[in-house]
Length: 221
Image 1 (cartoon, rainbow, N blue to C red):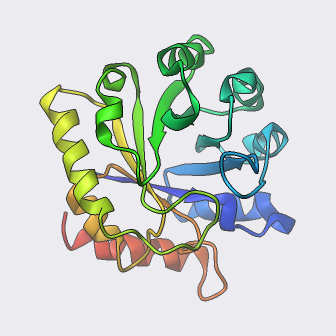
Image 2 (image 1 turned 60 degrees about the horizontal axis):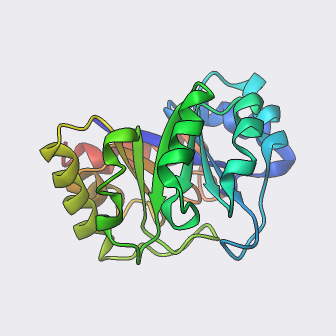
Image 3 (image 1 turned 120 degrees about the vertical axis):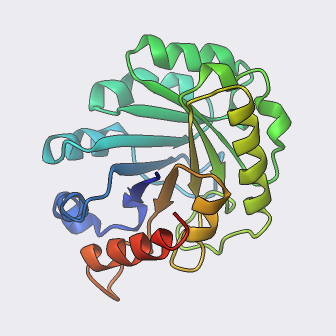
């Protein structure tokens, strides 16, 4: 079974708390928080204060994705703000094992993310230590991008890697998840789908958008 993590990157920040609660009412499992620094990715988004602001309005799991350089500088800040998991990019951490251990020492779960062009081989020495692996299926930096088709084969290869070592780590996919791609990604072995603009948009209610994604995924489960 998979979990749906709705990305607040596409939410209306003028009523962010309300939108998070609407997503909760629509039965999403996680809230995904995209943190960008304008260096590692070409965009600047939010920091610990936003995590702190939404923590009191929902009991949902706060999945914080750090698309930033030197993430170790801010780990404690995000944990104290209320994050339930911190995911760092392998590309930004020369001492990745140390960073993963620092997150766990702070008392929460730790994940590692890979950009589309980063090979899975870079995970071989860290897989046993992480609670989640995030496959970026777009180049990070902006919401609403088109899914990169070659991501599906990468997800399938990672599924085999995790299963072969008996890992219980979540396999999360972020980027271009919508009605056209959600079932394909779940079928490839993902256990967490990150959806932003497919859920937070003006075409339909949050509840209807969530239900439509659930419906296409039911066809392959």
